[in-house]
Image (cartoon, rainbow, N blue to C red; front, side, top):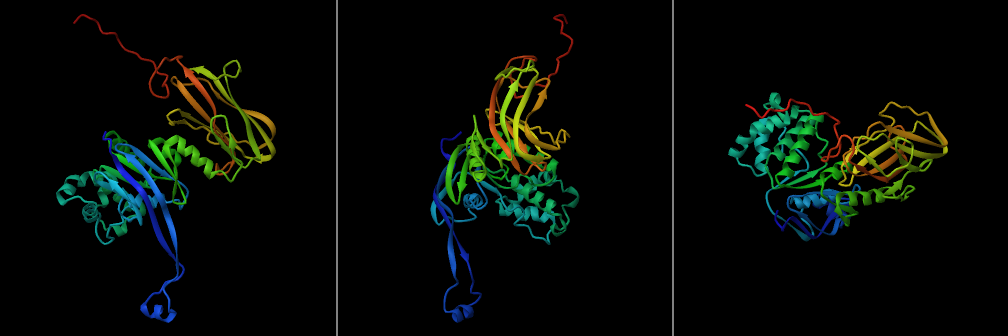
Length: 404
């Protein structure tokens, strides 16, 4: 891996004009005897960062924080008013997919048109054409005018062209949810291939779990200014604190806490088979995760949930009572609720528990305690070392004899 960054952003600022009125002609300007009125809006202010070669880098922040503007500056779609951006290698940008398509042309013709815009020659496109069409899943419709495509087909073809340019740097803006489940799986596999090949990826997404799982480092933007940069898990946790600062948020043992507070998770325990609180268990043990709650007022149809991460930020599992078809009518007063696990099939390591209490739609948090409990897993049965979970399988076979 090179010691030089793939992308270096140096003191970049970008300004836009927000017009309150526009002069549509010289005549209108003459009659008004003034220029059109506008105010200046700084989408980016003095942003500096570096993206190391061969890494996956995320940009996060609220709407209007400047994420997409910065990505467009990296792609040279926009030019900064101040500062500079240097990059090394071919860039492919998955921003407004299919933006270069002509609606009257067929999918085949648009592959060559869009591919040439992205810098590929005719011979290169001919060599990759079948792969592009197969990836998009549009073999039957490739000679149909794209004006007759559904929005999903249109975007899939644009995505497929852009991702097959074989770039050194891939810029992605909110396109992880393109297409159906099968197409998304193929996209994630292609991203994994890019990472394995040492490609550099810069990702903008509001899906924080996708960013947490895909990215090595993350930059947090707020109102066009860089507020934080560092390892993905650390910066995402900081961002969650910013997002939920308007609610009841307070420090937790290992993380942050937010929610409206009508009902609260007062304490979370990990219990062994005898019902004793523990912080260290073994692979295969029977355990109980116990939520001690208090509802200051009746809460209807609550949903208890759990998220489990390892120290690398990998989301191991995320069960909840709604998915388990356990309908809770009303929560009122104090009590406890248990998640019973007959065999904890985690390999040795350290794990963090996030405990949640939401409404039935999972859109409103009564209490969300991020990384409230940490515990360690030691060798047990089966005895395994690698990965995150054990399959609990048994090896079978006939021993080979030394005689031939």
